[in-house]
Image (cartoon, rainbow, N blue to C red; front, side, top):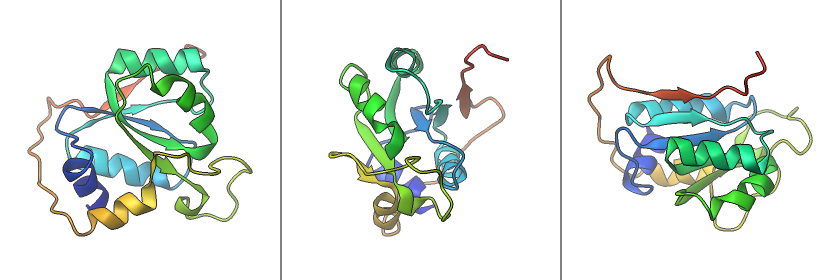
Length: 149
């Protein structure tokens, strides 16, 4: 609920807004998914291995304004963010993973200008989460495919 409150109150995410999640298989992924779902936003999963061209297309096509990005993907993300609608970036670093055997480089240093996921959760703990009414017609996930399957 703390991350959901942060996304609502600080990042300004509203029902139907697109939130990109560019994370490998780490424990932060379901935490972000629950928060995004609770506020009725649409999670847009992005492959952390995408090239700048692929990433730019997906951010633009989905209309993403907020992104949660692993530090290891930040170099590619930084190459395209200035040409996108993204206004808020939450970074997932090694300390946010909750595991000790994360792959080397999976989520390294946090880039300047981003907010660490742990800091967003801590800040959200003192904010008010506003419940959002959802029904079966609400879109909660926008999943792209690389076309390889």
